[in-house]
Length: 346
Image 1 (cartoon, rainbow, N blue to C red):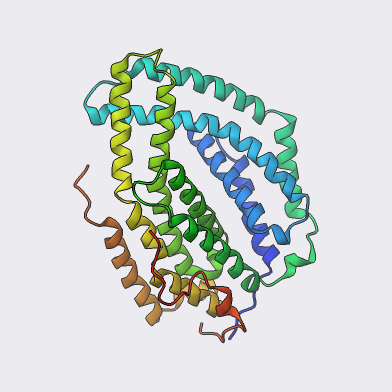
Image 2: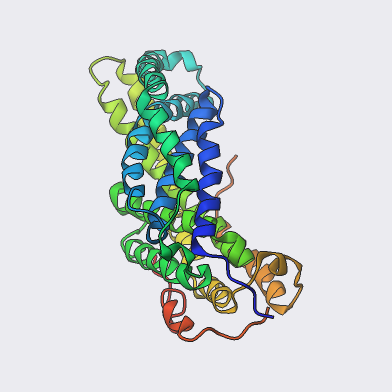
């Protein structure tokens, strides 16, 4: 029996409500800053992904969320940098005290950024933002929000797949960090979009999210190393040269190790079998409850494919520590997933 499709607006409201909660229900600590930052990113992505179903006023919320994300990011980036230095000290077998001149300067910058964030979170601007987000989920939405999610979602996903494939063509292991960062952004946009609709498409969507998370981790390590190196260079006249030499060397080693994984991580996302599984999920219009309880041939095929993919991702690493009729024209909508003879770009 063909399932009843949820409306696009129904899916959008669920996603927005979930991430609004994640934004406001966080403790005032390091992890709370991180989770708030993630929530702002997902909210901005949801407002962009579901834009056709939302009232025009939603565009203004993206601007305000960008403001909040900048304040959160200033703190979070310094938290990560300080934590990285402590990790590097352990890896190098030296005391963190050796890097105290760098850590102290980063801690001072973090204290300033944290004070600015506290002001932002206590400001009328933040209160207005949270009120507007909550009001949005209760507001009347345009007629486009009543469209079938099964009809509206595939072309939106396809668009993000095309963008990722285009960026991935330049994402070679030795590409500049800025090029790899663009690929990471495209991968994150696709990942968030799939997370918003994972309950509609079940295992194939979640499997691709897992691979996209791997891409984010690999490319994120390279971007973090590049960003932190620039920060260290800004201290060249203020801290002992030996501190900078050791830290920059350790960052370079991390970036090199991550670059060795770039091709495999991207290929695991773009390989034809992975795209075809998600394409079949779009065509069949599965429900997540059926997808989870149907032990058919496709599920077995998916599981064996998962194991092969994980082995491919691991690669030669060094040792260190429903069955439903096809909707008319549906296959044509998913060109980004079904391209016979097209090999993944790496």
